[in-house]
Amino acid sequence: MIRILTIFFMVLVSISGALAQETARVEVKNLDSKFFPFKRQVLIFTPNEYEEATQSEYDVIYVFDSQWRSRFDLVHSLMHYGCQPENEDTRPFIVVGITSPYLPDYNYDRNRDFYSMPVNIQKPENMPDDYGCAPLFKKFIKEELIPYINSEYRTTGRALAVGHSLSASFILESLTSEYMFDDYIALSPNLAWDDQLWGKELVNYDFNNKKPCFIFMTMANECVDTGWPDEWRSAWDKVKTHFESANLPEYVKMVIKEYPEYSHNGSYQPVLIDALKSYAAYRLTYDSQPTDSASYQAHIELSGTALNGDVYITGNQETLANWNPKGIKMTQMNDSTYSIDICLKLPAEFKFTQGSWDNQIWVKNAIPGNLRITNETKATKYYEAF
Image 1 (tube, rainbow, N blue to C red):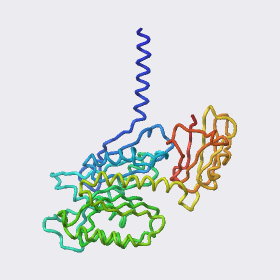
Image 2 (cartoon, helix red, strand yellow; image 1 turned 180 degrees about the horizontal axis):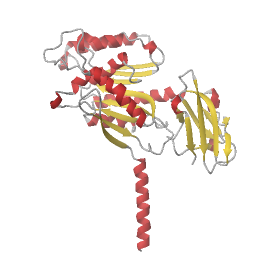
Image 3 (cartoon, one colour; image 1 turned 60 degrees about the vertical axis):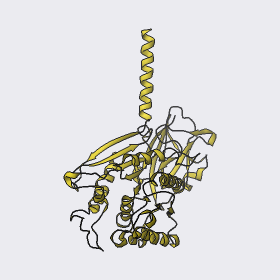
Image 4 (tube, helix red, strand yellow; image 1 turned 135 degrees about the horizontal axis):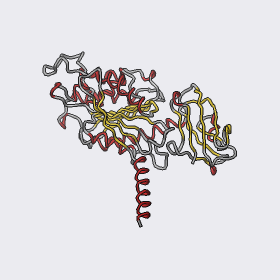
């Protein structure tokens, strides 16, 4: 009886350990910054099986205003349940919540992160001389936070920023002034500040100099009738009207929508669902074909004791036989390992087969579905077959 109980306990511990490895995780980090006299708190979500999928990299979503934890939790929860296209391979993300603190000892609050000192209007009397900390906040993100995330976590290097209200204004301004993010979800941005400076910068921005990007901008019921200043709506209307007729490059996906049925704060969740669904569909399309005209050297190995006979790799470009299941034959290095050195355009997607889709080879140390190489510095892969 004791032996049976011992075996049962060991099995239970083993199952519990396996489940713990597969479970998504949220870490809270307090980072030192040379730009601020206090630590900057961030939340970091890593998805299910992140520890097991050692040969996969992840896009990163940066969520502003995550001092309101529900906003951070909404993004990582919605993106991994219900916002990705059905019957498609699920694309997990790393999600980073950026908090803006309220610190009376430092006379610091959320708005100090997002405002710059005005250049077109007189400084408001209630705005201290050291109030506009947005330039420092951008330096923290670009020079400290993003490098930290890219060095400590397996990232593709591609990043989406999500902001609401003043933080939406901040990420749109960063689009025109800094190269911090690739994609943007800006919900109800304030474009009226400083004589519509942020709106004018967006209208005048040359998108021909930008890499492929996704921009989703929205407005809820903010208008004079609901208590918002006329300048708020006027600035939005100018930006909206401009881009409705603008001739943007085909690699820029811009969505501009209005949700008059929702209030400024009440719009966050329903509009976010719409935005994330649109973004998830965009990312699947973006990765279906290479967008980089250059080719990069890749080394790919596949090992497994059950492998035998010929093994092929096939994928989303001519070099990978354009998804022909009897694609490019890999070199057999020994009884259990196959390899190939190949030049690929990025992003590259591929699978392994033994000559037909009925004999596809599945791997256990990467995200299920199409395998991916999206970063030329991470183009050496060692896959393990089931």
